[in-house]
Image (cartoon, rainbow over all chains, first blue to last red; front, side):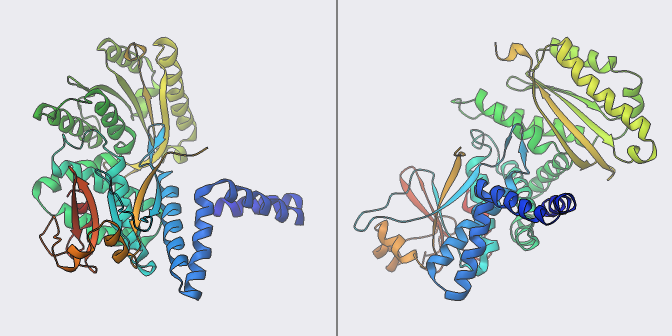
Length: 364
Length: 75
């Protein structure tokens, strides 16, 4: 909305009264062409109709459109590699033809929704259903309950945070998140690790991406304790990176039977400003180890841009040069690059960038 | 372009009776023969929250106040 108003003001200052007309047409087109935004408008209209008439049909349309728009718009802010997580949702009312017995499919979950007045509860309920049905696919049978729940809870929390309604998030945190986290010491431990990984921006951008790859590699194999250990080890590996103190050495490669990943951290300004050769050597070493994906994670000091813009600019240029050289010398295609902001372990705000490279030998 | 969407079938709060009729279990519901798969509570029109099918069996879940939603999906 704020960006739309800014565009509108710019158009008015440029074109005068015609700017309002152009701006309105632009906004309407944007809404019409975007099914989630148009669902949000439909929800507002049906809500008003329901408030006036009290009709069930209007209430159903409001509940359905409101959930579809809010969850689907929210998920666009949760990058999962090149895609978004979880999948888009479509609420469909359970109906059956008269005289016919309705069928519930294997593993399908059919939920009863509350009246429109308890819409926040409905949103939380369906966010749960969506995350459970569309994430961690193919590995749920390998995970133990505390780890599975921790990942689900944090994914739902992220989704509801993006919904942007404090009542919904508060309801979830009070009634769902905290009671589950407090269930056991093991739950607290796993959840603590997932939260740290998430705060550095590595939960949906790295952990879930690799778990998705993992599920493809182990497809059709029965679950084993070795498989669980591989996944638990990956979480520990990322937790150590996420909580790494300045100048502390932590493992930057994780190699098991089914997971072979490497990480290059770019966080120390002085180190990269003196040259990118060390990083390129680290990348060459990872390629030599036949890793299946290599991540370059850049944690930029946000305040550097304010106190020393020149050094900051140089830092940005060096990281861009590193990316170009990796692709040029090693001929590794970049799978994705995502920019985001996060807080470091000390609570400082950081600009961050994560790039994933997949060496050519992986697809051979 | 149509996006891939997860369809979640939901029951309108005023349609619970019709729902049990449509799956052919309204008599069992009236007689109190359906129990919650998590806590064993008798399922009623008021406390019914969700149903799923596992290995051909229908599993129901009630909306006990202290039950958190996520547990519904780990029936």
